[in-house]
Image 1 (tube, rainbow, N blue to C red):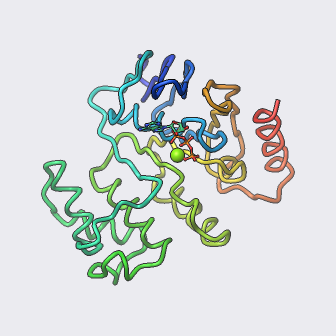
Image 2 (cartoon, rainbow, N blue to C red):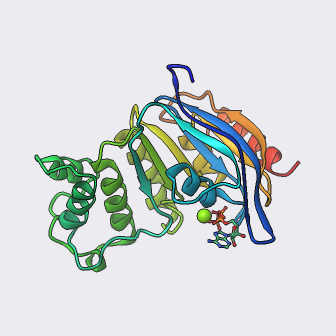
Length: 235
Ligand SMILES: Nc1ncnc2c1ncn2[C@@H]1O[C@H](COP(=O)(O)OP(=O)(O)OP(=O)(O)O)[C@@H](O)[C@H]1O
Ligand SMILES: [Mg+2]
């Protein structure tokens, strides 16, 4: 694997009983690249992330990272510990990775815009704020690879756009694999978009989004990219 490559996913196959979910999924991610996986509900996106993270085993194919990659996972549901505060949730993740808090937790809380809410419990936060805690928790271990599973799917349109803007600032320079079924979100965030077929999933096309960030959703090039991905999804 070359120096510039962070992750190789090759020929992943996976079935659950008789249900074929992945049918040879192949793509790679470069260091510092933001890659979106897009595909319809149930096509196997979460399964791909779980296999990358080692939470599921594939039936075939392989995953390779650049030496000892540390991963952060932002789950589709926020999975916060309800009995721990914002601070406590992030600290818990840090300690689980064997890292002690040398001020990192406060730094991360600032970065995701939650200063002042350190002592709040998850149920006292809005949906967007809970997602920020989930992102903070994943970032706390300073991951080489950040896996994000539709973290903004449950947010209203305006909050979602604001979170997308903030996310690009927060993860600047990090290697990210971000799952979405929103074409707009993929075109806004990604350097490249991996377009998946309906189940069993294969890669239909990989679309490069060569538009400078931050991107203007109303620009002609943005709208063109959206069309390109739309037609790749519906061949
Ligand atoms: N542990 C499991 N046992 C059995 N079937 C599973 C399991 N996990 C996932 N599946 C099945 O695999 C298929 C793909 O699921 P997956 O969660 O990867 O889809 P997805 O692309 O993330 O969908 P969504 O966009 O709705 O989140 C689904 O049909 C699901 O029912
Ligand atoms: Mg999913």
